Amino acid sequence: MRAGAVMGAMCALLAGGALAETAAAAEKTEGEKVEEKLVRQLPALPVWSMTDSERVKKGEIVAGQDFFGKQENIQPRTLPEIVESVLPEPVEEEPEREENVREIPPEILSAYFEAIPIDAEGAPIFLRDPQELLAQQERQDRESFLKYHSGESKVDMFVYLFDERQELPEEITIEAVYDDLYARRGPTALIFYHLGKPDRAQFFLGNAIRAVVSEDEQNRALRAAVQEAFEKSDMAYQLDNFLVELSIRLYWIERELTGAGKPKPSRGGRDVLEARVADRPHGLIGRALLVVAMMTGVGLLGWLGYYCTERRVRYLFPEVDTGALMGAPHAAGVGAVISFSSAQLPPSQQRDHVPDYLHKM
Amino acid sequence: MVMKCPRCVQRVHRSARQCPHCGFEIGDADRIFGAEDVRLRCLTDAAGVLKKKERVAARRMLRNFQRKFPQLFFGIYFGSFKEIPSLRQFGFWLLNRGAFEDIKVSRPNEAGILLSVDVSGKAAGITFGYALQPFLDDEVTFKALSAAHPHFLQGQWLRASEVVIKRMSKTLSKQARRAKRNPEAFQPALQPETEGTGEILERIRANHRASQSKTQV
Image 1 (cartoon, rainbow over the protein chains, first blue to last red):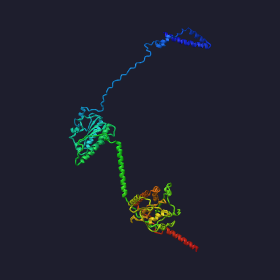
Image 2 (image 1 turned 60 degrees about the vertical axis):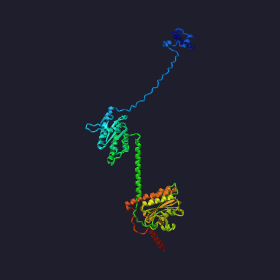
Image 3 (image 1 turned 90 degrees about the vertical axis):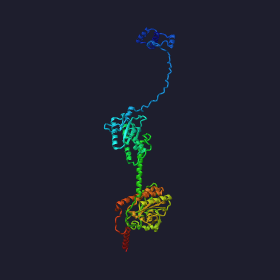
Image 4 (image 1 turned 180 degrees about the vertical axis):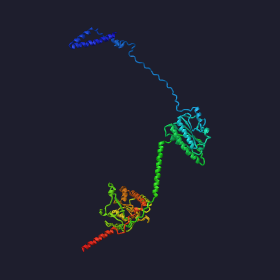
């Protein structure tokens, strides 16, 4: 309360001082007189003692405390304590398991490799996709293409579809699958194809074919099919391109097969062909180089043909009956004469058709 | 098929024994260059401007021309004609009086084309035989020489000759094809075997002189 009184006194004192100065400086009006009267009625202003001043400095009293309400537990000049942060101990992170690499569940595996599946009519199903990686329509389209190929070609294509990152168990290899299921069939091409990863495709031909067709040729066929697959971005279309190209290659292999007199032993025995990205030539550059090479070849051949023709061709003139001119026995065909004394003038301006008797001798 | 006089460069009609304009005939050229036949080769470098390698290359070029045109031959003459008044007359005379040693008899001078180059006088000209009259003219030869003009300017004699031969070969092969298709187009129009224009002119002049003398009498 005392502090509040002090503040009120200070205000009054200031106000009173100001009024006194005004009264002294100017002539007092009626209103001023009334105001002066009111000021006199106010209580006297409090006076600061030295003790109050010391207490304010120490923080025992706060100026204006009465106006702003009583504030308790004010801790003057207290600094926040520095709290030492405790860092967590480094924990060794376990390496994340690659999510994309997925093993194929055993029940699915059995669906893949139990037997050659057949449809309602007893015909073999050429496309195996028990995981339904392709949509139904897409699967039917590819299946119908494989059936068409089977009707046209002696070498059937059996395609097993897997996911992009799926890995087969070690004991299941394309060779083993061939031996188990397809060894007793006719000429067969077995394909393990990973959707979205054509370069992981595996290709295995039956023994009868491998005996005739060289390994290089088989490798080329697979590489060409992979290259064709990479022409598309959509996974299903990639499979389309892959199968079409492989079907074409198989057609030529088949022709070689039928035309072969003696079977040639394959170099690598029963090596499984696996496409490698490194083996895949860069599509655009390869094609551009091929086009340039072909054009150069055609150009060279054309030039060679022209050159040979030009060298061989003979030009004959009919005999012309002309009488002698100016008594000349053999020739009177006087052609042009040009001078080449000036590099500035064109040949037409250096042409000499002035009679000789007008020349300076 | 218009021929020109080598001296006055005026047109000379077929079978004229001398130029109707200036009276030029082969005898005039003989009086300047000599009446005897001259023995030479189809490549004659009298001016000595070709190196050995260039001479070999030039001969090969001329052989190729002869292989391509079995009836014709091409001759090149490099000379320095300080004392010769006219390169045109010289070419005319040389093709008539020249005996080309390395050309077979089956290819007479009538079937020859001669490129004469005056190295010191800086001029070049082309002359051709009677057999080529329907197939070549002044313009064709001028174009061939014009194409070689830059090389002549730089003294590249072999290159210049090569260009001339190439141009002439191109023209000749075209003309040969055309003649094969339509030989009649290149046969000269038949003219009555009458006296040449020179003789007519002589008679006119003689008559004129005769009438003048009669008048004087």
